[in-house]
Length: 369
Image 1 (tube, one colour):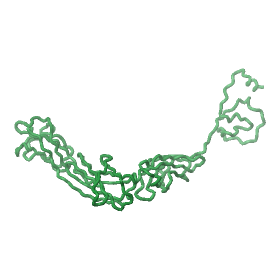
Image 2 (cartoon, one colour):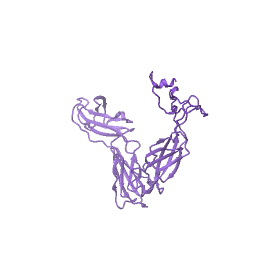
Image 3 (tube, helix red, strand yellow):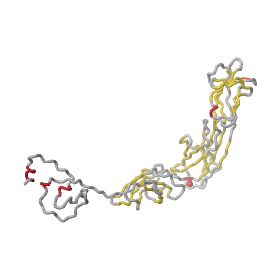
Image 4 (cartoon, one colour):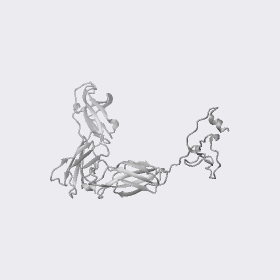
């Protein structure tokens, strides 16, 4: 079971101080942030309560009275470079770079022990995306009130972290705290959990599906434990299997099984089958992994080799009385090891073509006798 405790702190938007006193439209600008869907006010302090001429990217927008240029229902189309000027002389009073986005939403956090008992891996996301530069701080503690203090959850990616030194089978929960901060605000989420409740291995690896010689309705499945599972001999896994025939048949799920191989029986002969495997802690803590990458295979089929109808020259065939043996199917060569026609014409199933004989060859002369 997982619990989600949420604490949110939202700070108001603020703008950086503006540069002033320059002329023209070039030069550095002060960065101002605004929230999408709200009214954003661009101020021109140097105007001192007087009207100011506003430009965007050098193009005139008009002259607006104090306190400044209001952008109702701001959208991403309003982002850009703005400047305010003296209405008469054109002197530049301020330049503003406007960036729009959202304050951070509450981080949605999840943690899984994919490398039990070595480490816990956590990740989080924000919805909607802030669209602004956002910093994250992730810490954890053992115990709700953190008598021992908080520790850093080491970042493994932009929105993920990991920590180890776990106390196995502890009834005191760990608590992960993720705080997101940008120019428009701050939000934090707390996630308490017991380590054994969040065990979730990575999917099994190296899945192989092989035919079994002589078995037309069986397939041999073999796989390996996930490489991220550190001690499979001491903390074994169990596995379940799902498989289906090609062309949209119903998927069947079987298991769990303790071994890393399984003989699938009762499959349809000569049909391609697709297989996946998932893993779970042997003691049934936590959840099954995601399904492995699929592997496919077809059961063994008995070879049906046909020999070409290649005969020795008629004059070279042994002159023996025909034997009373059934002829092979019309229009087909005999199977290897079977006589092609009546009699002892064994050259018919050699699978080797005889080269043509040149005129005057002694063998042709002997055949004409």
